[in-house]
Image 1 (tube, helix red, strand yellow):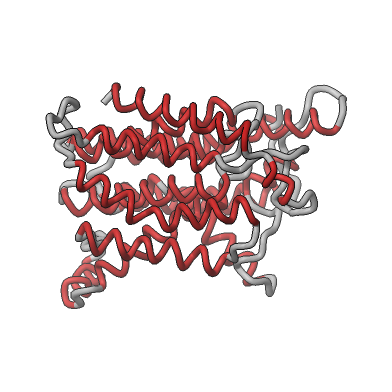
Image 2: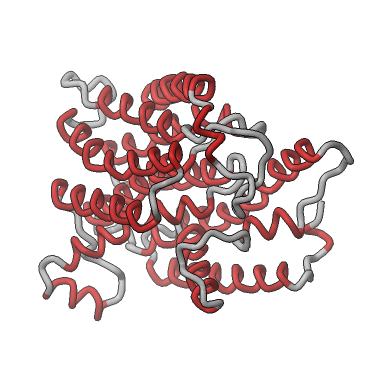
Length: 364
């Protein structure tokens, strides 16, 4: 496993550096007046391509017929999985380069890739922990596949929403993948553990260039890699091992999932389209209302300092769901309770920050 992390890290770090140095022209297309922009200068957004390359190489190496890594993962299976998620990742990368792929088309690509991967790998969401829903899933043959496809196709966009500051979404992805690999090893699934640790290594290869200086961004392509792979891993884990609660991945991913759902509600309530970009996400409010720079200098330096100091707040926020998910991964009622607690905490914190009622101990 460690060797796979090392391989994916080296390949991704090299690929990201190449994109960082050779693919800067497209960065000028990213308009300075976009509401979700919180940086100065023209920064390339092709980190996701490097992550995909690093992870993909490690996946293929893990499937060497002699199985030197002892993961029991045929190269044919890993290659098929890569090909299935490729359309979604390419759609994100094309958007990063051109800024011309609409939300509707990107959603269609992620859902299409999700349907493809569910059909080819025979994945389905057969358990929810709610008896009434589970009974209905058993009666409707293709409902489990459809639900799994919606979950897999939707999570990439949830990661894209929280990908706002240097190291934020990447570190959340690492925490989630480590939690999945821990539970996978607990139930003896080395293949699934290898799948996500390769993504961990590739993400670290990206983060060394992204945090804290922000020399390159993951872009939509990176968010789609994280979302697709993590969602496939979660669905596979719950399907293969009945001892794993279906609410384990729900609590594990409740931060990006609820951020997306709350964002949709907030925009619809204001009469806006859910696809409209704005600057009112939770991490953006923390950036504006809580984080302060400790020095007065030029605008670019201040912006970078505030950007870097925003992510740790959200890392801790995400860890508060990852820890109980790992501790109670087979206990559905407890996981449900923690999900409800997170939602209540998020809404309370959001309203508190909006109303400028931030406690002093939260301010640096």
